Image 1 (tube, helix red, strand yellow):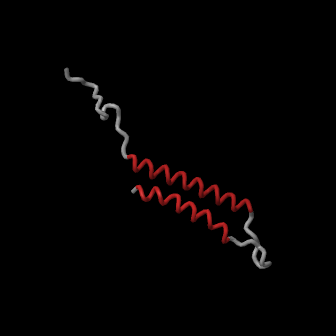
Image 2 (cartoon, rainbow, N blue to C red):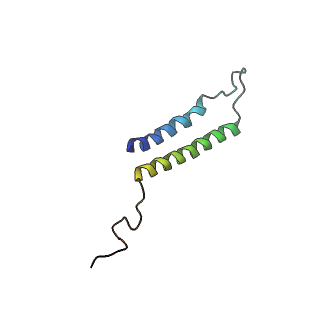
Image 3 (spheres, rainbow, N blue to C red):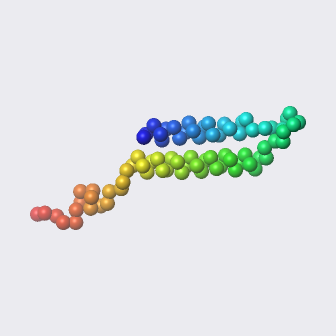
Length: 78
């Protein structure tokens, strides 16, 4: 599962390379991709990666132990 967390960085790099292949409009046939759409895409990918990393980190951390389960029980035996 730790490998999945490491792959988030590679996935992010690949997703951020996609705007490189978007049309630029230099050929005169296609219209260029608007800068606003590119910025929405980049920040959308960024937010997706943050959410994915947070979700994977919480899964890897496992369930949170309460204070009573952590070895400090409410009842102490003398």
